[in-house]
Amino acid sequence: MPSCSRSSSPPPPASKSSGDAHKRLYWSTMSFHTVKRSRAVALLAGIALAGLALAAPGQQPPPGEVFRVEVDVVSLYCTVKDKQGGLVTDLEPGDFEIREDGKLQELKYFARETDRPLTLALLVDTSISQEALLPTEKEAATQFLRQVLRPSDLALLITFDIDVDLLQDFTPEVERLQKGLDRARINSPADTGLNPGPFPRNRILGTRLYDAIYLASREKLAPEVGRKAIILVSDGLDAGSSVDDKRAMEAVHRSDSMIYAIGIADPVYYHVRGYVYTGSDVMKKLAGETGGRAIFPSNVDELQKAFDEIAAELRSQYSLGYTPTNRAHDGKFRKIEIKVKRPGLRVQARRGYYAPSS
Image 1 (cartoon, rainbow, N blue to C red):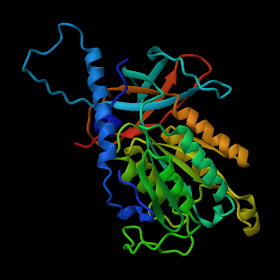
Image 2 (cartoon, rainbow, N blue to C red; image 1 turned 90 degrees about the vertical axis):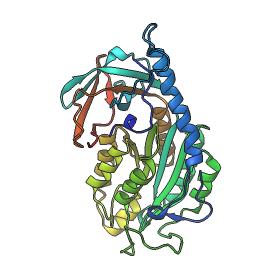
Image 3 (spheres, rainbow, N blue to C red; image 1 turned 180 degrees about the horizontal axis):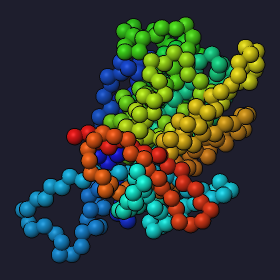
Image 4 (cartoon, rainbow, N blue to C red; image 1 turned 60 degrees about the vertical axis):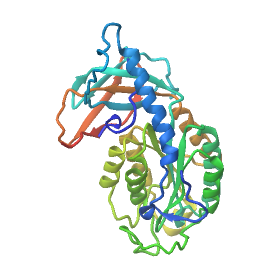
């Protein structure tokens, strides 16, 4: 369902931490209601203010009379770039055209997003193929979090290899996330004493990429409100997941999240073993279908630059909202296409959403 069907807000008109031990994500029952509540209240207050801004004099309901209206709003976040890849941040509502399954939609909500809260899930590949790269990834990820997180934002940290482990639950504190990154190890999940859960470990080696995306989206991001993104650091190769790429992508769409993928692979690892690296196509697909972006740094400097570019994009988005002409609650996937009328610009946005089920 589009993001505003839950508690999240459309744009203005036209915690608990995981502590010091690893937690198996599929058995995490921690409550972060306290952290979420303050953000939800702020977002709902934004809806109320937006509604007041729309109401014209003379259209106020009589005292004591309450109107209840149920409206499905599809909320989208997009980035617009010029031919040189520069961010375009001066567009107006009239510059956008939205189509759903080929039918033109009326844009009803518009905003330039710079300060609206972010909810991030940082997913880091700790399989054996990343052994030589992990220290650099930790350092760059920490700097990224310090750069992008603001007091109203939340982020969590998940690592994946033969297991999917939650090293830090949602928190606005970079220090907690950094401690989680410090605990990340290659193929060495902690012994938590927990049962194996719905996705038991069944291999000595593995890279449960799709499981990590699926669980982060369904269990963690879906209940959250506002702008949501997965920051994925991996070579893009899955081995041993219990769900396939289709189920993982469906979970991302249903959570109204986007994926920013940093595809980083160790050429020595692949050369020594005689493997052919094919993960770039996976990373491009994950990012492209959800409105994010795939970046493939080839050295340490480019890795930090990749994080910097993601931070800039997250703070330079447009928020668009419309009420779909197709009101059917059939649970089907609907394709979305966003275009801008100004020549030479391209839009980066998710390609669809799942309608609500009746």
